[in-house]
Length: 98
Image (cartoon, rainbow, N blue to C red; front, side):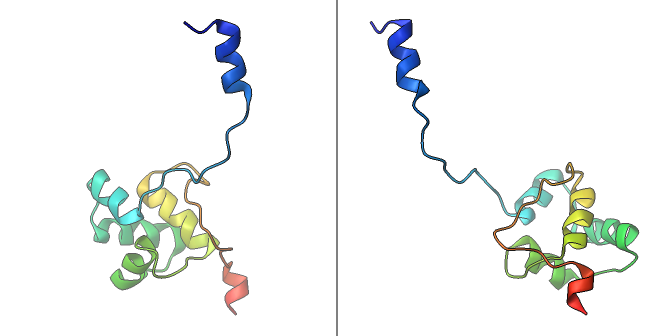
């Protein structure tokens, strides 16, 4: 049987970083029992603009990028803490889109 010291030494060596588990926003929305219409309503409340169903679908499934503001509105729409939605691209801000 391994000693406490042997076990500690075994796990003290840092393992290589791996991509953390992630799920598509559409799966999260379904798990939360939210409809696309509910998400659209909540995004409109936050931004004053109502995106189309296709826009939300494309963002949720990774076919379209989203601005910083849209990501923040989606976090609120899904009831997530600020900064919960991460991307593998640099989101544009509304001022970049001009």
